[in-house]
Image (tube, rainbow, N blue to C red; front, side, top):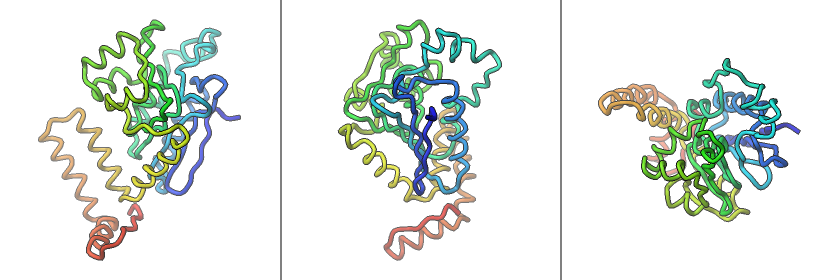
Length: 260
């Protein structure tokens, strides 16, 4: 069985971490395949939303410590100083323009927590948890957590979560704004699908541009950002989707966007 299951259904692609016997602990093949597939789907004009989830009862337990201890996995002898972090899944997740949703089906710890936080939206099953237990293992969030968490919940909350190696329930995550909603376990994929379809129904060029500008805005001054937004608007004004959106509004019907 592949460490990563990939499927495309219409405008929605789904990537499933597939090592349920190890709670989807990250392996080297899984890392490589995940980056490749994310980039592939981001280039695919038919894909408008990417869903990331896990097989079995957990989302991702983090890096595979058993492999690392044996010297065959991440943190062991398998990856060295020549690792290009720009091609690692957290960097790829941050850089792609296709919207991403994490269907958080269980515990996400360490690297798994960073992957979940790296998605644009998160739908959590009631039994899901985010476990920031890395400081209890003698390391730190190595895949974007120290950048993502302060921006999502603020400095003080992040300090409390990371310094205490806190595990957060789904409801605590919702209260902090770390997930968009909490749903019953058996409704996770249907609720995620419904949200993905709602996103996919909108103009994909505009959605991708909005995500791109949100990402740029994290490091820009306001005046610079407004200028860059204007430059993004110019090609959108010339797109078929813009004309279709106007026509659908006038004709009081749902628009049919083609991504052109």
